[in-house]
Length: 289
Image (cartoon, rainbow, N blue to C red):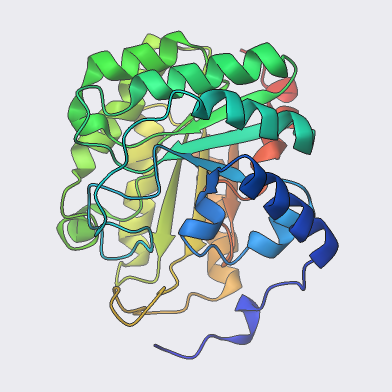
């Protein structure tokens, strides 16, 4: 793996707070994408008492070559107690904003949509003032399943684009660039009161022009919030980092995104799709729906 540059160093976490979050997660038998996907911000987020919950996991039915989530194990049977345990964790962590994501569950008829709904309902019942963001898979283009999720009225519907159109087959071999755009467009049309969000990784061989084109495509389907971050190779088995993008380039993309009309663009080397996601609460005050 390529040596990381200076700007990719992360802050040392407050280990006492990190340990408290981990203790709650283990006590309630919950998974987080922070741990399963080896997120570089885990120390900072856990220190702040935040986590992105990974439901229906940790085994995924897809084998995306950039992702560190396990795809070799057989997907688990759904646990009917998971939504309530997740809600308990949100309560114990006193979260103002929660992000709920999942592995791909292409083995399920609805892609796991019903489980997302149960989690939203459990959190709303336990912590009614907590804003809820769902980071969902593409559901294999099952738009009825998407409607089911949106009918539960999450505050934010997030679905990551991940990369530019030219690299999609390489980076997301079981995904589809146009399907991702369609999911976000349908979300805007079906639930105009829900904020839509997406994220892009860079450093996989894309060009500046391709990133800008992807940003334009996302705005064209009404995407409200965009995150742009550096891809980091989890292990030698994963896709190589082609380029470490300097911080000033992220600034340029942020400015370009703002000029396109995104309500918020979070762009930096260490940005991930749910990094500082709680800032959406302020965004909702500025741009109420």
